[in-house]
Image (cartoon, rainbow, N blue to C red):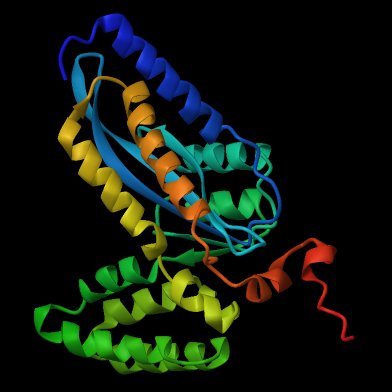
Amino acid sequence: MSGISRSQVSRLCEEIDDRVKAFLDRPIEGDWPYLWIDATYLKVRQAGRIVSVAVIIAVGVNGDGRREVLGMAIGSSEAEVFWTAFLRSLARRGLRGVKLVVSDAHEGIKASVSKLFNATWQRCRVHFARNALAHAGKSGRRVVSAFIATAFAQETAETASVQWRKVADQLRPTVPKLATFMDDTEQDVLAYMTFPPQHRAKLHSTNPIERLNGEIKRRTNVVGIFPNEDAITRLVGAILLEQNDEWAVQRARYMTLESVAPLSDNPLVSMPAVAA
């Protein structure tokens, strides 16, 4: 394109900013039993320096089984105070009914979740596996991965916990650090097992928003270094708005209404159907 004046560019940016702000600040209505949070890092200029900032994205599934982008935030670190401020902003907009929050083991997020929501925290199983295999060494990774997978293959939370401890005990003589790591992370990695079986494949990791993060990276790599945080909000917010619109027009629900309804705090939604 050519022949576009600065005033036209400015006007277009203002229109995008207004749409993105309205989207990111919109009220959140209804119950949201499941919440996924993930972060990606982008480079931005600040006071003449180039620094990395964390861009946090939250995606939720509501009581109708529909998936939506709920919010985003930009911060210099992922400390507890940042997580708390972000989750509190979602709560102020109306986020409620959260039963499970899925994320990587970022410092401070577990404490923030317990502080603001009466919810369980799920440590991303994929990220856990990477951390666990780092203790196994190259030669033992395949065997260790197969051992741990036997716990994930169980059908109930109780049997998964029993198998988890068996695996940890088997590994303790040869890989004590890994066994201790499994002891410390058991409850957080297996938290999803206490939820409906038909949901578990989507609850054990942050994979449901990995595709969204991939699209953000693809689009932001073209920019490279952002001039300021407003530019990040403009581009990433527009991508999130675009994705949310795409999810909204999909005919199929992300989770079936019948399977999600029992998790709702709204008695009119969670009440079982009365036989005719």
